[in-house]
Image 1 (cartoon, rainbow, N blue to C red):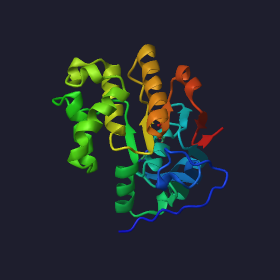
Image 2 (image 1 turned 120 degrees about the vertical axis):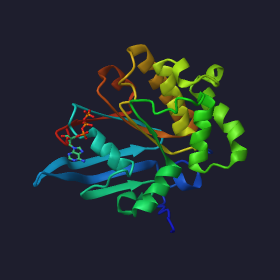
Image 3 (image 1 turned 90 degrees about the horizontal axis):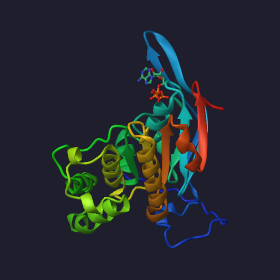
Length: 248
Ligand SMILES: Nc1ncnc2c1ncn2[C@@H]1O[C@H](COP(=O)(O)OP(=O)(O)OP(=O)(O)O)[C@@H](O)[C@H]1O
């Protein structure tokens, strides 16, 4: 199936060496337009997202904050194409993402997005190096690129000295940094992270945020993450606060 990029001229944007041709449609990577999501629960309609409007620009760190149950994960699932809105539109990388078929969305997700979860989602018997390598294999990155890209990603997250350790030999913060290396290995343009610091203490959370800031600079990626943690909000470029399925 053909996935066409719809590019609009953006005269105000200054091209940089880091712009890939596919990113050359202005500096907005993701636009969410009046998105609603409801679920059928026991014969009733539960409306979880109630008209969400947001955008993520290239190289931005955007945070979604809100109480448990406010709808953050539901929104993140829609942004990542794991779920689709009941109403409204999601534009990603110049495409009307929310209207693609399941197969098309999966392709876009595999190629252009990376995911980070609260519980680090590493293969326990594989070393940090092998975990990152596995993610390149799954993404279909040519084998010839693995030898350079795996150490490069582990260096980016500050784990060059621990490449051959397995998850149980690493701290929680280090495991999450391996998970970040895995998520960026195939060079996505958007990282989606659901409570990436929830399991970590303040010091480790600060390290994760420093890693995020580093990879935004060096990998030209945008990050959209959910959090409960007020101490990390200050490093965000933009914070959306969700209350009962709406931004306030
Ligand atoms: N598939 C589903 N079917 C029915 N209800 C759902 C479904 N997914 C989410 N919900 C409901 O939507 C509401 C919002 O859930 P969501 O997980 O998006 O909140 P959250 O802000 O991410 O919470 P937390 O911070 O605890 O993860 C909850 O009441 C939840 O029970």
